[in-house]
Image (cartoon, rainbow, N blue to C red; front, side, top):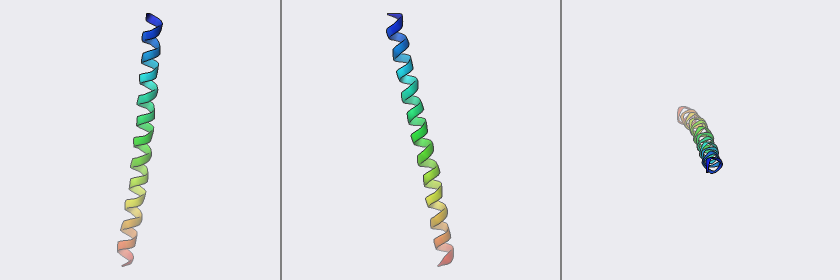
Length: 44
C-alpha cells in the first residue's frame, strides 16, 4: 500500500515538473516573439 502511494507521488512530481518545463518554454518563446514583433514595429 505504501509503495503504491509512493509511486503515485512520484508520478505527480514528474507531471508537475513536465508542466512547469512546458510553461517555462512557452513563456520564454512568447517573450522572444514579443521582442521580435516590437523590433518589426520599430522598423516600420
